[in-house]
Image (tube, rainbow, N blue to C red; front, side, top):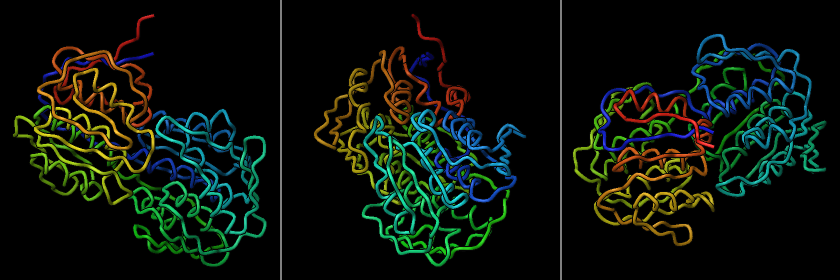
Length: 421
């Protein structure tokens, strides 16, 4: 397995370009199943999760090829298979997003029931409840969700809690369902909006994306299209946090500042100077230590759970005491123990971490437990005195393309190497 070796203490300076959004491209790729034909998707990040979704589309009968470094052609003209096997779904929970598109496109889906993951249980009961309300027959057999949609029709669906994947699955299932579907308490994330915009470009009739109520009027058929993926807002936030912890001065290009307002607001509270100019952010940390801030993760447009770990790293060297409360996932603070190995002064009580800013962090051997925890440990390593070794970095390859190369371009001393033994 690979690991990152980081020599801390370098201030990040320079320009970095943000890639396409992991959490947007996965449902966009799933949406190509809705209408047979050829799609060309641009600004696609080269990530492990993307490769897993490509593998799943190929298993279902589609054909995919890279026509440029970040442009993918997807041909679903011969796609007939409706079974998403366990071997794929166990690699990536987002594989369950083909549930809605298979129902919409083939009127049948057999998808391995996703298990829990490192950060929490993440059940799909709301997805299945929504499909049932659309008139689908839903059964769970031998670890698979088996859904048929012979008599599907529009319905009013009220989610008990906000669910991004559930909103996306119902969107894809409903665009080809007769009648009107209304989704209440819908997820408002930019990635949901991006899916709706692609579906509308294909001919779907959708209104209200980005609000709590989305309305879909079913159409008879769709048309394949070309589409560009939005920038990754969590990658943007991660580089901002790295800038803050190293007292850096960086320019971030090809991003969308409007997607990370909650992150920018919190970073400004820490003392970071941030200037937004179109698709560019200029960030400068002039303070010797960031000011401690309290954070509570919330569904969009609140502070994203996917930035909680990175902010905990930043707060570990802050001036003061911060309280970081996680409200989305029940087990998303495993990075706290690893940060303590580096000298962070923090304790976790229930779903809240109390972080007292330490004078400094020290390099150590640490282990990544999930995707965003990996980013947190890298950020901490950039500021730590001495050498930090981050193992199990296959997690970070799921969601950050060539992160070490981008950080080196900003002056960081970070290398990828093989684990011994």
